[in-house]
Amino acid sequence: MATYDVRFPDYLDGYEAETEAKGYLVGVVVSAGNRSFELAVYDRTRLVQELDDELDSDRAYFAVPNLLVVRSVTKAEIRRTVEALAKGNFQELVPNPVE
Image (tube, rainbow, N blue to C red; front, side):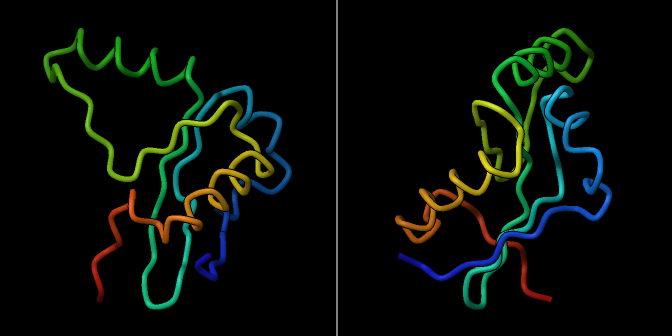
Protein backbone atom coordinates (compact mmCIF):
# COMPACT_ATOMS: atom_id res chain seq x y z
CA MET A 1 0.00 0.00 0.00
CA ALA A 2 1.24 3.49 -0.86
CA THR A 3 2.26 5.86 1.94
CA TYR A 4 0.14 8.99 1.80
CA ASP A 5 -1.06 12.08 3.63
CA VAL A 6 -4.57 13.59 3.53
CA ARG A 7 -4.99 17.35 4.02
CA PHE A 8 -8.39 18.89 4.47
CA PRO A 9 -9.12 22.57 3.68
CA ASP A 10 -8.50 24.90 6.64
CA TYR A 11 -12.04 26.26 6.36
CA LEU A 12 -13.42 22.83 7.30
CA ASP A 13 -12.34 23.13 10.95
CA GLY A 14 -15.48 23.68 12.99
CA TYR A 15 -17.79 23.23 10.00
CA GLU A 16 -17.75 19.47 9.60
CA ALA A 17 -21.49 19.11 10.32
CA GLU A 18 -22.39 21.79 7.77
CA THR A 19 -20.15 20.19 5.17
CA GLU A 20 -21.73 16.79 5.76
CA ALA A 21 -25.20 18.34 5.42
CA LYS A 22 -24.23 20.10 2.17
CA GLY A 23 -22.93 16.84 0.77
CA TYR A 24 -19.77 18.10 -0.89
CA LEU A 25 -16.25 19.21 -0.13
CA VAL A 26 -13.60 20.50 -2.53
CA GLY A 27 -9.93 21.06 -1.90
CA VAL A 28 -9.03 17.81 -0.16
CA VAL A 29 -5.42 17.07 -1.12
CA VAL A 30 -3.81 13.64 -1.00
CA SER A 31 -0.02 13.48 -1.22
CA ALA A 32 1.72 10.21 -2.02
CA GLY A 33 5.45 10.30 -2.69
CA ASN A 34 6.09 12.92 -5.37
CA ARG A 35 2.45 13.00 -6.49
CA SER A 36 -0.51 14.95 -5.18
CA PHE A 37 -4.20 14.71 -6.00
CA GLU A 38 -6.87 17.33 -5.35
CA LEU A 39 -10.23 15.73 -4.72
CA ALA A 40 -13.79 16.91 -5.13
CA VAL A 41 -15.87 14.84 -2.70
CA TYR A 42 -19.65 14.42 -3.03
CA ASP A 43 -22.30 12.23 -1.49
CA ARG A 44 -24.81 10.55 -3.78
CA THR A 45 -27.67 12.96 -3.11
CA ARG A 46 -25.62 16.09 -3.78
CA LEU A 47 -24.05 14.57 -6.88
CA VAL A 48 -27.47 13.81 -8.39
CA GLN A 49 -28.56 17.40 -7.62
CA GLU A 50 -25.42 18.78 -9.31
CA LEU A 51 -25.89 16.52 -12.32
CA ASP A 52 -29.51 17.55 -12.73
CA ASP A 53 -28.69 21.25 -12.39
CA GLU A 54 -25.79 21.16 -14.84
CA LEU A 55 -27.51 18.97 -17.44
CA ASP A 56 -30.58 21.21 -17.36
CA SER A 57 -28.48 24.36 -17.78
CA ASP A 58 -27.02 25.89 -20.92
CA ARG A 59 -23.77 24.14 -20.05
CA ALA A 60 -25.38 20.67 -20.37
CA TYR A 61 -22.47 18.69 -18.90
CA PHE A 62 -20.73 17.99 -15.60
CA ALA A 63 -16.98 17.43 -15.48
CA VAL A 64 -14.92 17.37 -12.30
CA PRO A 65 -11.39 15.99 -12.06
CA ASN A 66 -10.76 13.44 -9.29
CA LEU A 67 -14.41 13.18 -8.34
CA LEU A 68 -14.82 10.99 -5.28
CA VAL A 69 -18.32 9.84 -4.34
CA VAL A 70 -18.74 8.65 -0.75
CA ARG A 71 -21.64 7.60 1.46
CA SER A 72 -21.24 10.66 3.67
CA VAL A 73 -18.95 13.67 3.38
CA THR A 74 -17.10 13.29 6.68
CA LYS A 75 -13.39 13.23 7.44
CA ALA A 76 -13.68 9.61 8.60
CA GLU A 77 -15.43 8.48 5.42
CA ILE A 78 -13.00 10.37 3.19
CA ARG A 79 -10.02 8.88 5.03
CA ARG A 80 -11.50 5.38 4.72
CA THR A 81 -12.00 5.86 0.98
CA VAL A 82 -8.50 7.29 0.46
CA GLU A 83 -7.09 4.29 2.30
CA ALA A 84 -8.88 2.02 -0.18
CA LEU A 85 -7.50 4.08 -3.09
CA ALA A 86 -3.99 3.79 -1.61
CA LYS A 87 -4.20 0.00 -1.87
CA GLY A 88 -4.34 0.48 -5.65
CA ASN A 89 -1.56 3.10 -5.57
CA PHE A 90 -4.11 5.80 -6.47
CA GLN A 91 -4.40 4.54 -10.05
CA GLU A 92 -7.97 5.85 -10.31
CA LEU A 93 -6.81 9.43 -9.74
CA VAL A 94 -5.12 11.99 -11.95
CA PRO A 95 -2.12 13.70 -10.30
CA ASN A 96 -1.91 17.47 -10.08
CA PRO A 97 0.55 18.96 -12.56
CA VAL A 98 4.08 19.38 -11.25
CA GLU A 99 4.97 23.04 -10.79
